[in-house]
Image (cartoon, rainbow, N blue to C red):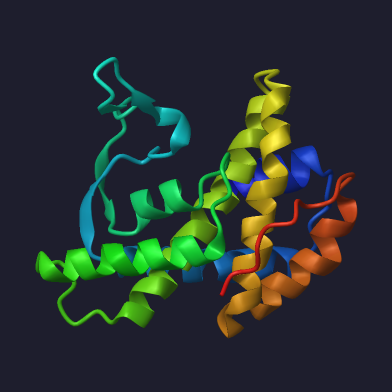
Amino acid sequence: MALFRDWFLIEHLKLELNPQDERILRQTFELLRESALGQIQVPVHRDYHSRNIMMLDDESLGIIDFQDAVLGPITYDLVSLLRDCYVAWPAVNVEAWVKEYYALARKAGLMGAISEMQFMLWFDWMGLQRHIKVAGIFSRLSIRDGKSAYLDDIPMTLNYIVQVSAQYDGLSEFHSWLQQRVLPLLNYDLPALEAES
């Protein structure tokens, strides 16, 4: 998540971080890290999104770019696909798909005592962690590597960050900080995504 701080905030937005900014970032990153580490660990692709799923000649699906697969949080690939940086799904569909995944994982014996509510929190916070990191990656790809097209994908990523941080009391300070310190620096409006239910 340091990529968000270093490449998105400092390099891309030119935000001069003060001690309070640093504290809010540190506390938020720690909450998200603890949530990820508290999740059931399973094999994850780590880059499971629309651009890495291909339709093959026989109309079956092929998955590419899996060389970084590791053991990781159970919600990681799910959030990568359903809160894709390039495709916005209707919130009602996302919620239904997450609940269906949870039910299948429970049936497979993966959930133990984890409630659907806890799984949804894991999903949301994993998505927040992923989008924070991706905003930094996209900024770095533009600044360091000259791939400025990635900047076009930052608004949807930021919108996910804003929406999820608004839903949880534990993230309220981070959400307020985004509203006061980060969003005013943008030279574009965030896209209108369907409100989460």
